[in-house]
Length: 198
Image (tube, rainbow, N blue to C red; front, side, top):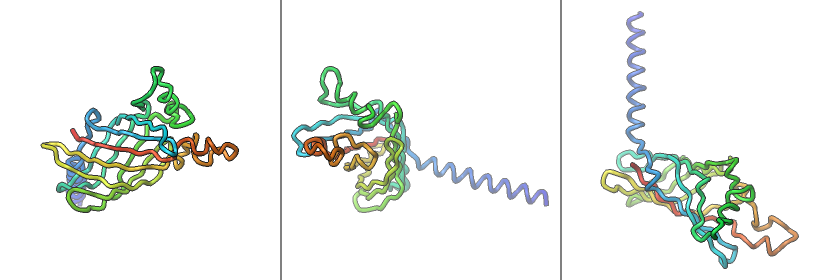
């Protein structure tokens, strides 16, 4: 009986180890230095546009049989950069303070893929959770997966409504007594993302 018990334990451990190895073999770590997260914001009527970048900290894509299955990515919010900022980086500083992303309190954001629906030609519809300022909300976007020699590249573009994450500064309806301020900054932020694996 004791021998049978030890055999069962050994088999269970082997099965678990095999499953873990299979999972890790399907996870391709991202290369933060080759991955890009570009953002674009504007006034409501696009009179005054701004764009910039934020850097990834780490992450991975889960790929099996050349198909996207999942992934998770961490974003370093302290690296928010404005391409057209002034010499004193005033806009960048403003985006980092409590009016917008409050990066001292929330230095990281993350996105985790929950479901993937396969389309054609390496394209997918993706359901994911996006966490900003400690708030997690679902987002939907289309993504394209490509093999680049020994690496993988995923690209996507999507738009979020920043007020869903309580980023309300200058938003529509943020001050009912100031109609000009209400329409000063669009609630929409557009992201153009490229994730490259190592």
